[in-house]
Image (cartoon, rainbow, N blue to C red; front, side, top):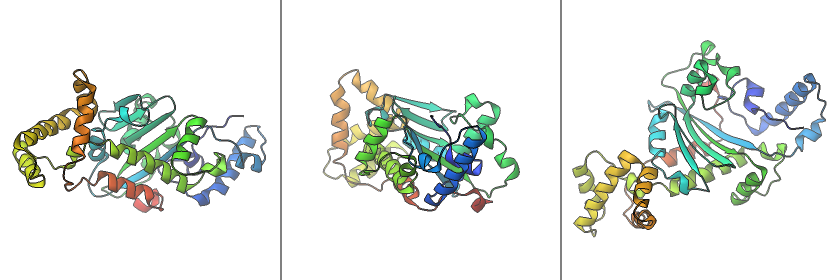
Length: 300
C-alpha cells in the first residue's frame, strides 16, 4: 500500500497552518480513520512504523513588515543553483513570484504562498502546489491583519535513497519511518542545510549595497583599501551584471570562454572585506529555527 497525503491539509484543512511534534498522534488517528472510510484497515502501529519514500519539508514565513516574498525571491534568484547539490535545472514561475531548483531526486522552492493560492483559484495548472482545492476558499471566511504576506520554502525529497543521504549529511541517524520523519527538529535541520548550501553559492559581491556605480565604487574602495583601482572597476562591472543577469546567466556567458573564469571570480570574491551583509539568509534561517509554527488564527 502506498499512501500519499499532505499532513497539515489532512489535519487542518489547509497547509498555511503548520504542524508540531504534538500533532503526530492526532494525525495518526485521523489517517487510520480516513483509510477505514476508504475500506482500508491498517493497524496504528503499522502506520507508525511505515517506511517513508518521499518527504516535503516546508516552512511558512509570515512577513508583517511591509516586505513581500518577491523581496526575498529576487535576491535568491541571483544564486547559481545548478552548482548546488546536483541540481540540474532552475525555473522561475508566475511572473517572478516563485523559484524552484530541481533534479530527479529532490527540489528546492521559494514562493509567494498567497499569490499561489490566487492562481490556483483561476486554474490548478497555474499554481506551484498541485492540490490546493481543499483550501481555495480559505481567505473568503478568514480576514487577516495587514500587512500579511507568506513566503514558503520547500525541500522535496522524492526518493528514499536521497532522503537517507540528506539525513546522513545533516547528522541525523534516524530511520525514515512515518514516526521518525514527523519531527520538527529533522525538518529544521534539512531546511537549514539546504539554505546554508544556497548561501555558500551566493556571490559575495552581492552583499555590498548597490544604488549606483559611483556609490558602489566608493564603498568598495573604502572596505578594500589594498585593492587596485582596476580591480575595483572589475567588480563594479561584475556587480552591475549580477544585478541585471543573476549568477546562472552570467556563469553561462562566461562559460562560453572558459569555465574557470567564474570559479576564479568566486574564489577571489571570498577574499573581499566582509561588508554589511544582506540579512536575507540570517532572517530565513532564524525563522526556520523558530519553534513556534505559523497559525492563521494569530493573524486574524
